[in-house]
Amino acid sequence: MASHVQAHRRQPDRAPGVLHRAAPGSAPKRAAPARKERRRVISRWRVSSAIMFVLFGAILALFFSSEVFYVRSIRVRGNNHITREEVFAFADIADFHMFWLDPERIRQSVLRSSTIADISVELGWPPNLITINVQERQPAIVWSDAGAETWIDLQGRAMQARAEMPNLLHVNLVPGDFDGRKPSADDFTGEIVLGALRLKEILPAGERLSFHPIHGLGWTNELGWQVWMGSDSAAVMSEKVKMYKVLVENIISRAIPIAELNIANPDAPFYSVLWEL
Image 1 (spheres, helix red, strand yellow):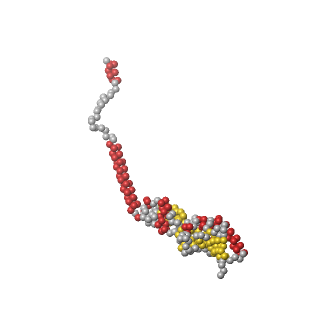
Image 2 (cartoon, one colour):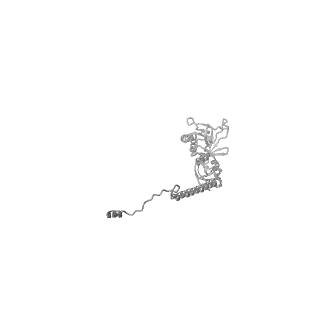
Image 3 (tube, helix red, strand yellow):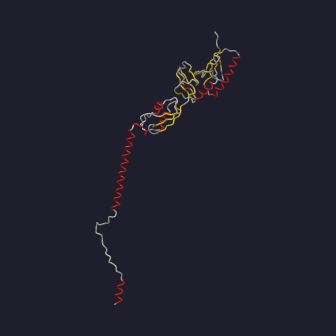
């Protein structure tokens, strides 16, 4: 009996466990704070989005309502003869909004001017929304038709004469009716221009060239002869110049009074004798 009592005493004192079943609808409420935090984040994000939307709308409204973002004038660099107003007119961008500007379209529009060789377009912000850098064509000769002058560059491109150019070679159209077709500056090619400049080297000081649609380029030399040299390139004209010098020496040595020397066709040059009355 004593051993039975001792074994009973060795058993630890433990409180009996009782399992309680949770009543329906009484779930733990630990997730409630996290859910509230998510709601706060979503609310803040919605408010921020609304503010950004309003600001973006206000900025767009400012861009399209403010006068400073519409093209009223341009800045032009590199121009010596063509005016800023002319470049602006060729660009055809008056009253355009800055968002509508296309640099390549502007470039092609300005290149319609015969005075312009090339340009570059820079877009910016007010007050200089657009800057156009201009490279002008350089005149090589001045074509004159009854006093109306036109510039022609080395490539034979005619353009408006914009200033007095006394140092350039002047070419005067011979007056007359040439079978109903009147020559113009557009008839000059780059080769003819270079040929004319080659003749300038043997012209008397201040002498102007004349142009005849049949006989080509010519002038009155120091002896009072009317000389015609045709319309050829610089290389051919150089050969004609050599021929001209030889013919002049030969005619002078023979004391022939001539009125006209024509070397338009180098294979068949001829001269006209001055008739004495």
